Length: 520
Image (cartoon, rainbow, N blue to C red):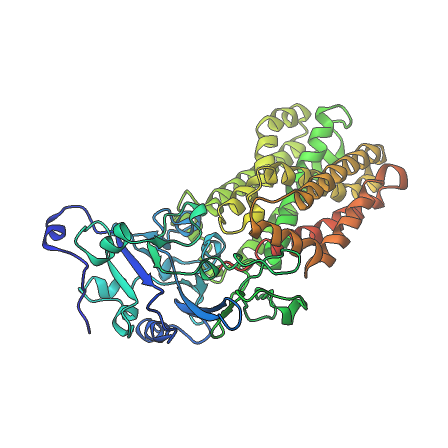
């Protein structure tokens, strides 16, 4: 075993400030031998099918002036790590020495860290079902040893050291030689620097296809829940010579699947079931004593809220650890804040039912003061949760919060229409108008979102995947059903129910397409 070279000088050892461990990957030396990958697997007991580090090869240029370049891909040990902010239990945490480490004992398997990482560096270990990634072999550094990948690299293409020590080799390279980091626009301040790396490997969307200017991206395995490759074998379109190819199978499953898509739907309907009748009562279209305000709205809201909680727990890889969100909470995570909001909203619904049983209409009016803001927050907090996924550009929209509020009104009003038809027919027309208005606004917002010029290639590709790719059927079927809801005041309450049903596939296309563009 090799001892650490270039890590601390005597001067650095005497300093009270902790080190800032970083890596320099010299791609001019990398030969693509994958020794780093196998050493990492052996040292850290990484199962088959997942990798903490892997090597990507890219053919650049055109025959006969073509060449192959490599990129070593791993956790970037960000100074402002999105995975740390998103983790609800602090299982992902940043050490004083700059290493982003993880604690499997308190990981709940929510995959928020995977969604948050702009570098596609985190995975769920298939054996222990906890999040895992490169941690610089922190256990070796603590013993004064080099990480396993550094030891085995035959060309010394991997350097590790203390950036705060000006005498260390990594500090000298970073400060005196041209180096690059991946995705600097994400402002994560990565701790992995690339020397001599070709842009085609730093950015999988860097190379434009010759026809039509559509961007190429890295080839990955295909299959259920796996990122599509974008390769001509998959889409039948020509590709540029700089299309990236992973040298061996590395799975890149979408972190959040259909359960998260369904959760956005159930949560929206739960919030809207309270908001819709209360707002209609506030503006005089419903009586505060109506059965929709007193019983149907709160009961539908509680039922959908319970289903939302079930879906959230079901989606965890460690569902029995769900309580850690409350006992080991990390407040920057919007999973934690969202859990608090949902509990507050549940308390509002229970209080509303209690008021109804007590027969106090005036108390309904008083409860609406705090109840409406809490219900709105229950509808829109997912926008903040999605915004923590910095690598998913389609979700970085300033209008996502208001859009979710509109969807909540659409879902809530649509869910109440059957009860109104059976129990309170005079409420049908106001609810139909609310469905029609919210459906129209929803479609306008989605049209603006999909047709506007997105600022990044990632967002443009995700929007295209939603409207013309593998999620197009969900998108257009949902849009058609929601469009039927616009006609609800003219054709009947059933059109609102159709719009309610169409909202789920439409949301599914949005949630999944944002994750469908590879990040590495």
